[in-house]
Length: 125
Image (cartoon, rainbow, N blue to C red):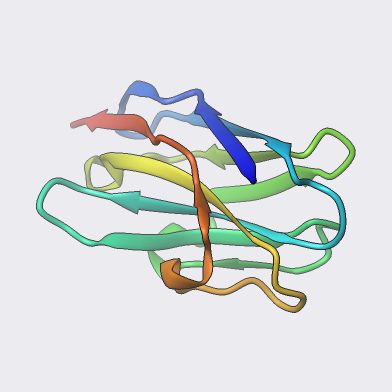
């Protein structure tokens, strides 16, 4: 079992920045990928970014490329998402997730069996 706890959400103005963190505990040995997803009211859970444990491979959804940066501290089993140049359309609940399959990070939420509780990000215009 893995426990994931997100933090760092909140309210920001358009053009501002926030940094999300996700601390993993429990089964954290071996290789894994971690990802960030977001879900706006009435919407589906969409891929934001993902990264391998060693940090060598990452992937971003087109709407956040160039504005968001995903990083990971493998020793601390902590995932980060630096969000810059925020837009009102970034408003959503942000979830972190972990996938223990070996390989490149997946964009599909169905590949991630473990999820955090989510943290709200609200961007005002």
